[in-house]
Amino acid sequence: MISDPIRRSIESAGRLTGEGPYPPTRPLKNFLEIPYDELEDLNIEAKRRQLARTPAAELQDHYLKYLSDAKEIKAVTVCFTDIEGRFHTLDYDKKFLLRSWDNLTFDGSSIRGFSLVNESDLRLGIDWGSFRWLPSDIFGPGKVIVFGLILDKDGSPYTSDMRGMLKSLSDELAKQKMVANIAVECEGFLFEGLNAEQNYNSHEGFAPVHSGGYFHCLPNDPLKLFIDRLAECQRALGFENEKDHPEVAPSQFELNYSYTEALIAADQLQLYKLTARQVAANMGCTASFLPKPVAGINGSGMHTNMSISKDGRNLMFDAKGEDNLSKFGWDFIDRILNSANDICLVLNPSVNAYRRLDPHFEAPNQIKSSAVDRTSMVRIPLGNEKSARIEVRTVAPDANPYMAFYTLIKTGLEGPMTEKITSEERRTRTRYLPGNIYDAIRHMKGSSFVGQILGESNKDKFIERKEAVAERAPKELGSLIKTTEILFHHEVTNQYLWSRF
Image (tube, rainbow, N blue to C red; front, side, top):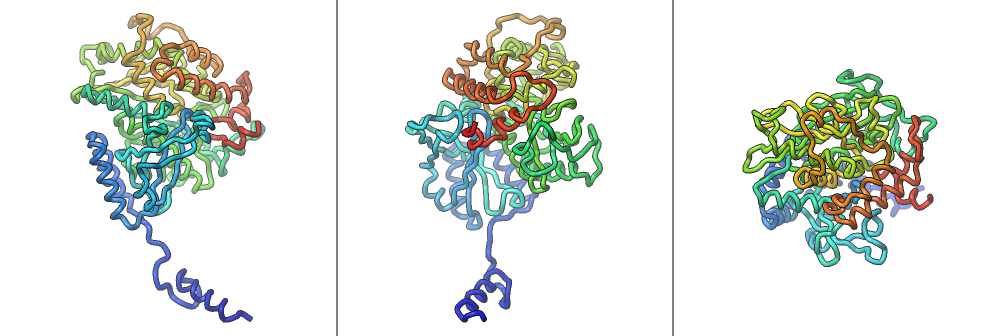
């Protein structure tokens, strides 16, 4: 027999939840949920403000007022990226953030490659221009997201914040009325099961959800449903989609969206991968951005299309130039080719990435440029005054986008011309990128140029992280994808696993 106090408690709960003998007297939750078409308008407008370089103080006032007025928002997700490219998020209660947005701190010593234990505290500033509204069915209702800028104790930019370095470079270019535009073609795989990477073993490998190939998928195939749902989220986030399709390898996908300014392009790439992983998880699957998760088939790349404009004019284009590329464009390419070995570790930062640079699978491992040869490090796509660009095909999808874009832009604009490359040599010379992470580490160690553009401290930190993962993986790649190269990958593993080694 139920006592009266317990009965009254059950009946009270029923009134709140709608269960039990009483109808609900009020909704339990009332958090912000915005239809996808409205999300797209809001996020494109936010991106427009950012591209117009609206003053930071004006953006700060605008979004603080919005947060104060929007009662349905419960939390603000503040995100940042560590030196290896791993994405980190913190959810701040909105009311707390409104009081303390200018004094957010976190323990930097818990982030691999950041500060030491005895100097652990770091500050987290907010880049208000990156404010975006999130699809509630993917990220949960009542949340918005903003990218952080990592600051040292004294409030100065933290030296190992690659996003901060890319933002500073973008600001420097803007002072010269220049813009670096980037669009990526980031490939990935969809595998059966949750946490397929964390549960990987070399005896079983990954299980693809789809066995078709390039462009081929039935409308309700799991891979196509995943692609469609991811495309919807991208559209809502203001990515300005172009096309999407299954890729060459079984269960491989690629979704393309419009070019934009380099910093925004890097932010979008981090959201692209985060959203893909959550959409996949909602389907009981795993979205993987490992460069070569399955032996014997094509790996995943992140072809990086780049152009530089000044006063609204594309500096890469010349109707009379070779392949319609200007002298500026060819110099940009030659500088990248001259420093190809030195920057290879930035563009291919994992043991697994060097499996992808396999010439048997259209791998872009040759240090040359071409309008047609897809094994070249740099390709010159067919373009006009608006679309003329270069395509750096060597970038892996697990690269830190901020570090990769920063390095490519700085190299293309300022890299040493140690060797004059003729038109014929660009196409025919036979030189190859490093075939394993050990050679790539060696090249970066010996590069004064990488130390100059990244800073010697960042160069040393990055190499230290790459050496650590290399030591935990097999030195000989072989043809079998080894368990340790997956489990100790910077986007897969966790702190606990590292401490057990």
